[in-house]
Structures are given as C-alpha cells and as structure tokens.
Image (cartoon, rainbow, N blue to C red):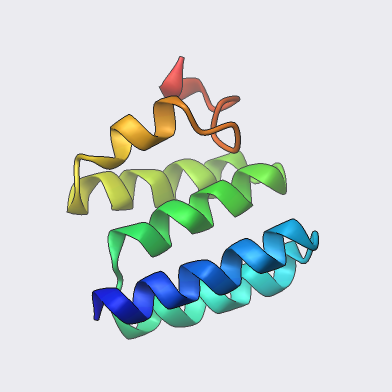
Length: 88
C-alpha cells in the first residue's frame, strides 16, 4: 500500500545519504515487486541516475510517469535526475 511505499522510500533515503546505492536498489526492487507504487519507480530512477545507469533511470522514470503524471513536477527540480536528457 501507499504507506508501506513511503516507508521504503525513507529507508531508501537513508541508504542514499550513506552512499549505499546498491542497498537502496535492493530495497526499491522489493517494494516494486510488492506493489509497484510510482514513488518507488521514481526513487529507483534517481538511484540509477546516480549510478550512471541512464537507460534504467529513464525506464523507471517513464514507469513512474505512466502511473502518476505529477512526477514530472518533481523531476524538474530533482538534482538526481537533472542530467537526464528528457528533463532538458
């Protein structure tokens, strides 16, 4: 559910702050497998971008956008996604 997704997002943020990007991907993968909430796809896109995996970042961003168009507003000001061409 949405509350569980937000909880996973918090764990993801902690991993990001501690530069544990692989662990963040694992957490987000589990969350996406369980419910596929758009925030999880969006957050995984951010991690993929930080890892330099732009194709995967774009794919996940697009999935999050298909679920909720609101993510476009987030992405425009998100430094994790700023170097991706679709935001230019």
